[in-house]
Image 1 (cartoon, rainbow, N blue to C red):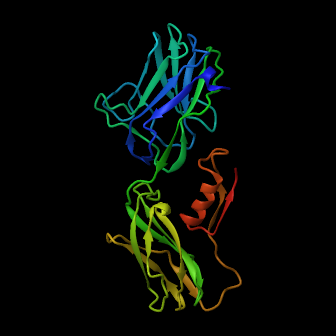
Image 2 (cartoon, rainbow, N blue to C red):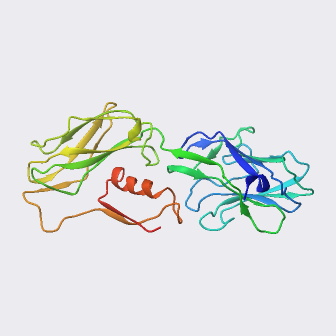
Image 3 (spheres, rainbow, N blue to C red):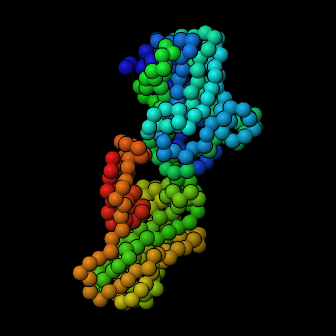
Length: 304
């Protein structure tokens, strides 16, 4: 339906935010031509898998404090419910209109993580999501039927500053045959660190290994990169290590180096991945690129 009837919403700021950080976000709903009758409501829902903290309305000095106001001459009642909407949009804030009605052009302003009373803000979810939607629904006439507005507000949640560096390798290799490894910079929540830049160098427990000269992380890598050209030349159990310019270092999982390729090989993967098309998050491209380029797995399967 055209947004002029159900209304529209915007969020400020709409900038990227770091996963797990304390933020303050102002969502403004603009009432459409239908208005909102006495007993009507708006609902702001989040995905079931989000671990953003619950919103609260009682203690302005505590985390998650949310302030709700309106330009109209009505009374608002606010409630946060972990099961306030339907799967896969479970957690929801509902704002009910009482003692009057709102007309076209009125606004409802919701500040999630209001800091005016000394609170630290609102802790956003701890994992990355390129399209984090605040789904806005409206029950204009108090019938209990909520309709989604056109164009709910969206922000991107990205990885925070680097906390550790890791290197992931295959569990098996054949003497003299090159393979690739994944190097990833992770934040304190285990997300890849989008802002990581710098050079990394490689070493190995195999004294005869042939290794890449190094790698320079750039903006497009977003904290993770698959690097090829690693060759182990000594049979046995070995590892590959990585070190960045700040002295952070890590050692890989063990690698069994065989003289010849065995009849059966060991592969790692995930059979049950889900995206925003069902009850997960992210797109199909995001899922498979994570499997290959961040998790360093050999295969992945998509279940919906």
